[in-house]
Image (cartoon, rainbow, N blue to C red; front, top):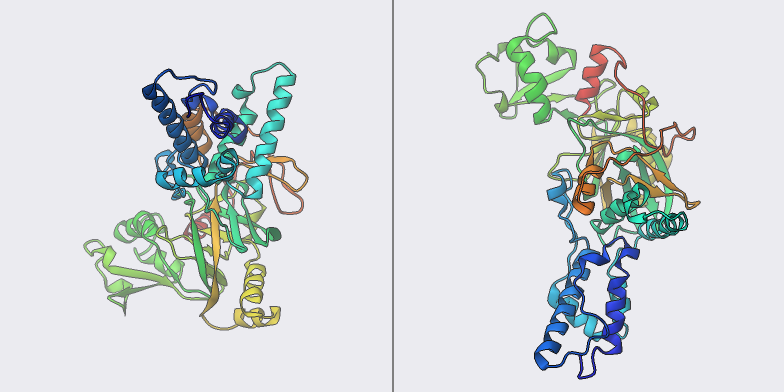
Length: 435
């Protein structure tokens, strides 16, 4: 601010913030001084400059994902946007030769974010051509919601990473921005949803042992052991049915010798040995996290024929996981496919990766394909509604097109047929136990 009003640089910043709608933000959310203001006093000049500074800081925070708190939208969203320190923003924008360009640089640089942004600009242009109000259209709202999710992602995804997109039921491996692997996945049921976060894969386990998690102990083992349940016979029948061994303080115990009606079940560990009936199958991919989620094989490959694959207890089941193991270990260790096959026929073993591989579990209900088409997926956990309420002031049921199975086994559009009634009771329990 000078005695003759805002400088050219300041006017460029004001103009850029006024274009916030083009980046999936809301220009109306920023309290800007008029670019042509001519304050009559030093106090009025200072007030205008402070107002502009505050707008800059708010814009920088919003561009980096600080408009909404992921954890307040849902406890499933275990993401922390990388918000810049306000002092850093002011120092950097002053030093920048193009302060408006500096503001634009704060938005996500991932290709998908820019593709969604271009789709948003196109949708708004088409809406305006039809004489409609584009800000009220659901297609633009879906794009904005998913652009916001990109602001919550790590600023760097990695040169080689695994990407599991929950609503799409698809896993990918991306190398130098090119997708080199696509496969179907099964994700958590609505009751046991898969959390959204990023972590580092550190090991591949061949022929894994399975330790029963707390949720399954509480909801399945405890009632069956203490009350007998609907399995018939002795209360330990559920253990025999699934080949579960019991240990106490690290030592094996005879399950039939325990008074389960009065025992503290949390002092016991339940494990299933490696083998053809192990619910984790032949492979497990570990990326340590507080949610106890991992990727693994399954003894129920028939479930991949379902179109709605919200069928697990939270972990991610992978179709043909040997392909992923071969890809990861060839990249990390130079292994051949035959080496992987040999490991699969051997004993339980853990192969540590030399270089951890980033794993990103995401919730994108809109993805732009290589042809520039927006692929929409079902809001399986109802998070679009919650974000619609936070961003647009009311919960909006965003209807996506009906789902049709992809004959190539890849992406699928939203909507689904029911997966209920698949298999027998024991099959269902085995699937539930698959975590």
